[in-house]
Image (cartoon, rainbow, N blue to C red; front, side, top):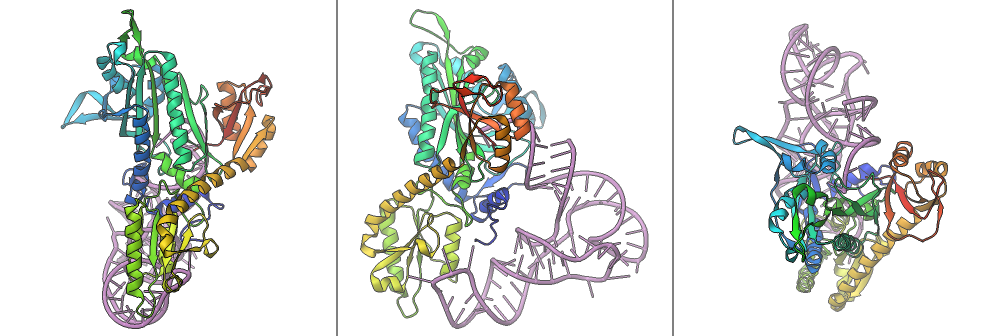
Length: 480
RNA sequence: CGGGGCGUGGCGCAGUUCGGUAGCGCACCUGCUUUGGGAGCAGGGGGCCGCCGGUUCAAAUCCGGCCGCCCCGACCA
């Protein structure tokens, strides 16, 4: 057990905070609810950003940047949107030493300001589709902040698109959900359940909201990405119209979609263990760390030379490699240091290895002495990429097995109530309830309908709340 | 905002009941010896005891007020 890290079985919330502190991912800010993302934590976000940005561009989107401040009146234009966001707005009332004529809202999301511009830029069906994305910070004055999961200010990406038809916009919303799904599984090694949100859980101003739900180490759900079909709600509020081929004015159909720094919290809580963080190789700022172990009798310079050579070779292959040259720190200390930080592969090079012409590898997902193996020095360049890929695969598989082993079927509400209190996890249930049933569900169990999975069996069953026959199954869970 | 807990060097805590010159572990600095799973010894630096006020010869400690943080709930990417 790592020092200074609470056992996750004992106190998961505390463990989470311990890992963030010990791995130097973030620090608390002087303003409640805000956090400082430290270089190592930010580097993980950069990996996320880099990969997603490429995927957005591959699907035809361009980046732009819209301002932080939004006239308050903009937020008020879409009824549901105001209702949803009003309680959590940060509002600027003074600027330049004067009270402002109209207060400015610090964006909680950018649908309104973007529609303001879209209405200007879009005139003809030839201007469509308009496919934009922006990387930005947003502010939501949440009641209960948690590092990465729900901070007052957070970093995210918000895609905003406008289309000629409903069908096209709906296709786009689902396409981006698919992008998120693939990213989560292929890069973050987080298995997710893509689904649709219920009326109660959907985004304020959307017609339909989609989500990917992931299971954290304590069995709770984390909404890890969302995509919305906005219909013509914002188009009507902002008069975002175009002329179709028949010279008729039409409202655009829109989507918006986003993932945030919350994903970093997801990575911590899906993969982390009692020794700290575990990072999937594709997200790891450092994929391989080399710990040289100085020998007693003059072998030191040779060990250093080989360590440097291997580092340079790996770097030239774009393997993110760090050589830990710190002096006066024991190898054991270094092992723990990098383990807490979740580096996927540790490479030890010492006198014993030299003697045998090998290096010792210790994969983070197979901790301790048992997980160690050796490979010949001259096979490092060939083996390391394979090993990183293997770890990436294994981590996804482990996470999936964990999720599946904590996914249960429930047939009636009483059974569910008792079960989720004992065993937090995902509960598969037939569902035909409405907002009232959802409210009751939450009140009595703290769980919510996380999503209506896109994949449905086509069979029918009895709703656990209403008893009515239905062909819809949902995932019930407690959520962050 | 409700319920619970807590504010003492960077971190974790003791000391508060019963007032009397602020302590421990880790971290940090220097030196020597070490280095294959969080090294050892020696020396050293660092504290408006959350803030304001009161009681007292004397307050981390008692009294009053305020502020902040954490956990649980309502809200949520």
